[in-house]
Image 1 (cartoon, rainbow, N blue to C red):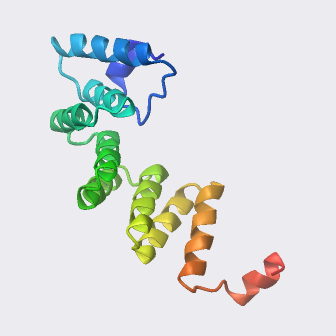
Image 2: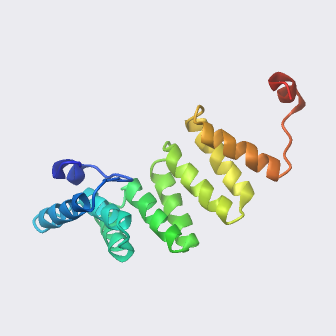
Length: 169
């Protein structure tokens, strides 16, 4: 379990606690701290904690507050996009991923997340473009390479003949 000070000073994408009591303790401690000092990171992590235990309304409420307190918190936008995606609010998710990317274009995770959303919505060319951008940022990340290959195949984009010769296919 992360200490409250860490949860107050840094926004996280996920918490991944093992036990429900860890979530309850985190939620309680963050709520107590927020009574005296408002903080975007704390609201973000409170939103993530609620989201991870299935309290989606409280999750979105806190993520909205995180963004209200710091409109440059790219992780809060990305987390809210994930929640919107879960609720099938795909345009809201698209907008939030776009804002996260705008704020932090060097974060490959944001590009990948939006690519998966676009792929699920059958916007394959846009998804491919996002995966390619993620690959530029993290060239060795194999899942991104696999997605690019799959999408290119589905879109009928053939690798250049010199690439086929190079890789022996």
